[in-house]
Image 1 (cartoon, rainbow, N blue to C red):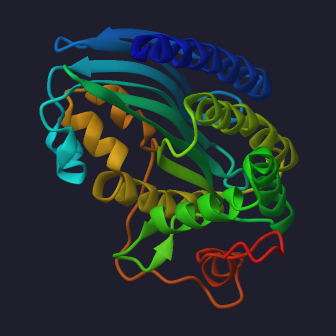
Image 2 (image 1 turned 180 degrees about the horizontal axis):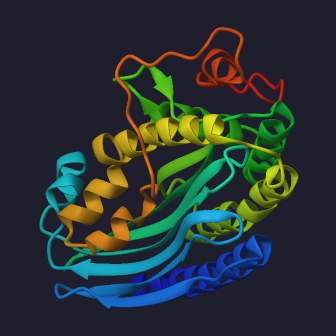
Length: 307
């Protein structure tokens, strides 16, 4: 039964990767994803798909992986000591998109499934995932649209689901050392097994299937906005926050590296060009200051007391 569940999820994730790549390449209009299939010596493998220097996307990737092994990495057993001594399967699709145009937000998402087994004991399984938006020159209309799609994806599963997972996203994608959020949030959930498997799986699909509806309208609205070197320089500077979060705080990056995942695929999420400047602050009254003042903190974007 456990492996039947795994195969059901795996089929969905492979199809999701195909659909994401097709839709994103069509929206880009100037490039396509190239695939790099890989094997993991300890068990499993994946297929990484990357687009670079294309029409909209300076760099993007949509990666599928299925890794398994006899023992869990330290990052997993430290958080869940009851999983020590269990074999595991981890399967997921993750994606990240870094556009050329600073007016088009960076975006990230993933959906994943984990199952751990031990002879004589029932399997332990859970789902996780979500998506978040990282604008450099945010427009409130876009952020509201993003959160409205997220709310609607959650709605069939209970009125409390969007507020809970919106809050979790704000808290998770928070750079403690900077005292700011990475972007404007979205959804984040992990360890999801509070409902029966069928319902949890349906929720994962609802999240994965809603990403394009949330993101592509923003891409189309902002892709032709004019920009110059000032905006590109600010984009490169803010991309540094993305790097800091992924390398310092992100649990998925840590799990992937500790479990012997493919480093090239794990670090695909990092942007292609980044800058750090000592003591930089935005000019008063500038659009750059608007990001810091109005967007890099949790907000109730839909006026529904989501906080």
